[in-house]
Structures are given as C-alpha cells and as structure tokens.
Image (cartoon, rainbow, N blue to C red; front, side, top):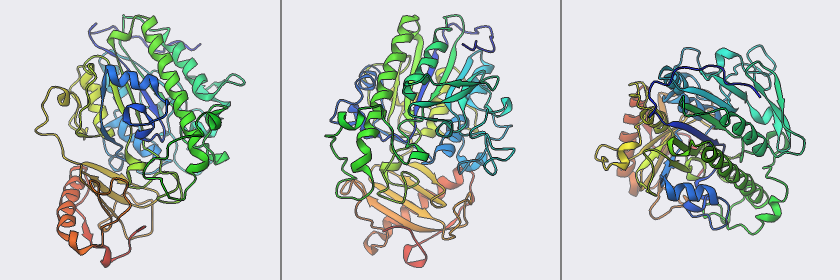
Length: 462
C-alpha cells in the first residue's frame, strides 16, 4: 500500500476530517430519502436522518469535467477555462486541496479526476488513460486515480495509477466500486487523530460505460431492480431507461453499500465523531429523453442531485429547502475546516442555512451548459428558464447573443413537459427571468449578453 506522502503538524486538534464521496451522473430521486420507493440507499438514508439533507440541490454544470473544475476551485467553469471535457485545470489555479494543505490537512484523492488532459487523444497532453503528472493533480498529497476512469476500467476489470505512476489493478472479479472502496479503506487505516485529513473519493458509478454503451451494475442488478418505479419525467418517453434503469439502480445500491463500509471504517478508527462526510454527484441523467445522450440539458433529470452532509456542524436530521448548488460546496468545505473562503469562490457556504441565517440566500441557482450547446439557465422554486447561443458551435465558452430555449412552470409542470418559451402570455415572466439570468452571468465574470425571444432566432428542442 502506498503511504501518505506528506505530514504536517496538526495546527488545531479541533479541525474536522472531511471525506467527500462523489458519484457520477446520479439523479437525486434514486435515494430513499428523496422519495425513491425501492430499498436502494439504506446507508445514505441513515446518513440523511442523522445529518443534513438538502432538498433542492443542483449542479452548476451538467457535464463531468466542467462540474469537477467548479468543485475543485469554487469558480464557474468558464472562469477556469474548463467549460467542456478534455480541458486541463490550469496549473496556477488554487484548489480546495491547496487551501486545506496550507492549514495542516493531509489531502488525498482516490478515483476519477477528469481535469488533467487537453488536446487530441494520444497526444502529449492526453492523460485520459495514462498516469496524471504530479503538477496536474490539483495539489493533492496522496494520489490513486485515473484522469478518465471509464477509459482505464470496466465494471469488473481495470486499473488506476498511484503517486509514482504505477498501475494498480482491480482484483479479478471485484466490482469496481468495491475495489475502489477497498483502497479507500486502506488509506483510512493509516489515519489517526494526530492530523486532520481531507479525502476526496470520486467514483465513476452510475455513469454509463462508454465503450459498452451500457450502465453496468453489479451482477444480478437487472433482476434485483427489475420492478423499478418509473420516475415521473421518464413516464411515456422514449430513451433507454426501460433497459438501463435496473443496472443504474444497481450501481447506486453498490455506492450505498460502500458508503456504509466507509462509515464503519471511520467508526472503527475512532474518527467518526470528528469527520464530516459529504455525499453528492456531479449531475444527473435523463436517459436520452431530452437529447441524444444522458445530461447536458437544463432539465431536472440532468441537473438535480443528491446532497447529504453528516458530521460536525451538520447533525440533527435537518432538511433545508433553499436552492443549493455544487458551487456552494467549496466554501462549505473551507468553512468547515475553519478557513475563510477566498473572494474568488462564487458560491455560499451552507452552514448559515442551518443556523437560520437565510435572508440573503439566493432565490435561484445558475447553470452553464456546454457541449450540447453553449447555454445558460436559472432555476427558481417555480421557474426553469434556459437560453442557448444561436451559433451551432458547442465549444465556445460564451456568446454575446442567446436565444430563449425553455421555460417551465415547475409548480404546475414538475416533470417539464410543457415548454412555455414561445407562449405570449408568459412574456413578462421571461423578461423578468432574463434580467435575473443576465445578472447571474455578469456575477460569474461574463459579459452581459443580448437575449432574444425564441421567435427571433433558432432554438433547441420543443
């Protein structure tokens, strides 16, 4: 086993350990605590009952790499130049790992990184299936990862790379989530109360296996979850959910079992009481019902995610209803460690929501959407409003002009079936939301654009 690579004196014995469990492409409604009727997530449900579950949590970018860039830096993806996949995190960016290391934390990363590569496959800057160089690891001390884990593994085979670039193979016949968690437990068994640690565990599940074009749950998943209840937004739609959803739930059930293993290991090591455990995902999945793949849209199936925190500062079975975003987690993590978040971080620490300080909390969440489009969106409790650039280029970071694309009344249409964007009766609503969206774009470092009505230019799906 690879030993931890750096030890710094513990500056404050009261600093909590922080373990971040990150799934990939997981809808919020796959968890029992969010209404999933099947017994898929008993451990996460228990975590929510003991800790804090955020009812209305959303990604800020429904694409893998961009969402990770936001989470590591606290900035929006366009600010760091990672607005699409296959763009490396700039070497001068300070990440949450850098901030925590400065305050005496040992930092560790295990799993999928997706922030090291740029350029053509096979080129000198392509590390999607090669070891990630030290300077492209975002400041983490301990390292056992692949840049793009779905390119170095499948559900029952594969490898990641250690700090020295050596391959570490999954044991034969071991499901990927189990094997990765085995290595997480190895790291945890080197921990003691003498130094706080920040461990980021990035799973690939329940993301589909790209080269197999299939969600790959543990063996038996298709039978175990064959009688699933169809989520409301998928009812009477096309897409591939009829075939894929049982394995999708199987992936999540495995994640849940392994979250239970990690909690048990923390308890065994005497670390549980002083460890903040965070569970969330980078984005959701709409199962090819909104476009030709699984995410990259403004719809809740793409953007709404589970968010559960349990441990110091987040105990008591609470459930804040405010709209929260992935962009809020970097300042939350630093605040939990006693670090004042830098002004460069765009989100808001979640702790005030638990102490009743909600008056200044935003009433909407802001999203940048890429690769399927150059798009922007906001979501409030009632409205979903999305625009896209008229230029067919999907790789541009931003545009000076956007065309209205979607408007949904989420109170009367929670499954987003009735697009009101061209309805003249909602022109005033669209104008109000457009002003809010433009303000949010400027706040994210963008130039205020022109937003045109759908009838004035090309738009997306109806």
